[in-house]
Length: 124
Image (tube, rainbow, N blue to C red):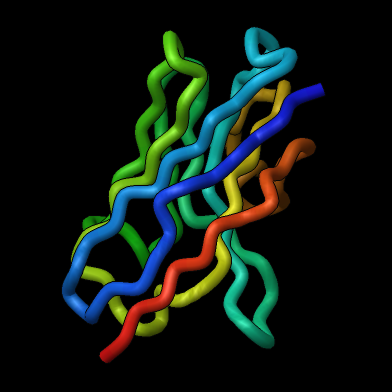
C-alpha cells in the first residue's frame, strides 16, 4: 500500500504560478510511475502529467510548456511546477502512484493509489 498527501494548492491570478508537492509513504520502493491528475467541477478527471522511474515524462497537451513534473526519490516526493496559469486550470489536483511503469496508459487511465487532492483556483 502507498499513502499520498498533496500540498501547495491555493488561489492565484491568471498568469501566476504554483508548485504542488506530494509526499509518499508506505511501499514507496515499488512505485514505478507517479503522476498528477485533475478534476474540474462538472468534468471528468484528466491526466495532467506522469513521470516514470526512469525519469521519462508525459504531459497533457493542455499543459505542455507550462507545467513541469519532477520527483525526488530520496524524499519520496513528487512535484508539479505550474506556470502561466489560466482560469481553465482551476480544479482539484490529485497525486497518484502505481507499481506499473507509466508506458502509454497511465496518463490516460489513471493509477492504483491516490491522494485526497489539493484545490487550485485561478482567477481571471
